[in-house]
Length: 154
Image 1 (tube, helix red, strand yellow):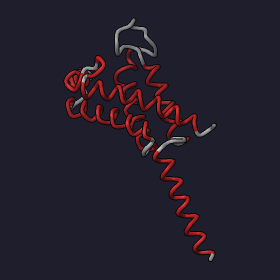
Image 2: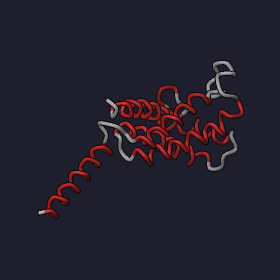
Image 3: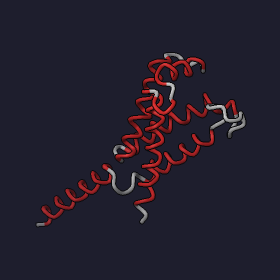
Image 4: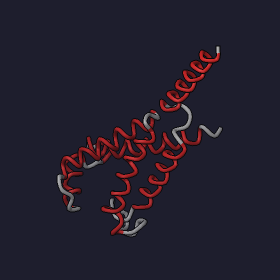
């Protein structure tokens, strides 16, 4: 049953990033879209707000898809970890850890992002688990290596 723990984590975290990326890129599910995201980034004093908004949207949407598929899990987790660390530092750190600002979106919601950081660390260190492209690649490489070892012994 151990290989299925990282699988469940990967599917849940990938779904969260897929939705967040869709909100940033396409404005789906109440999201701000590229324009709203770039305005938010500009209000934080970040330069090149529109290209950065596009990059964040693609990273989160594409990263979510890749996590769900279990492809290049280590690198996707690392990229999303940097994204979340910067989000906590620039957006949520000044407002506190939890919903201290009431239910105002964006204020004091660092707790969700810190949980995502922990989950991404787990995926980086533990791997993608079962039912993933990475696992399939590993099994094929091991099988090919065993096949070459058999050929050398003969």
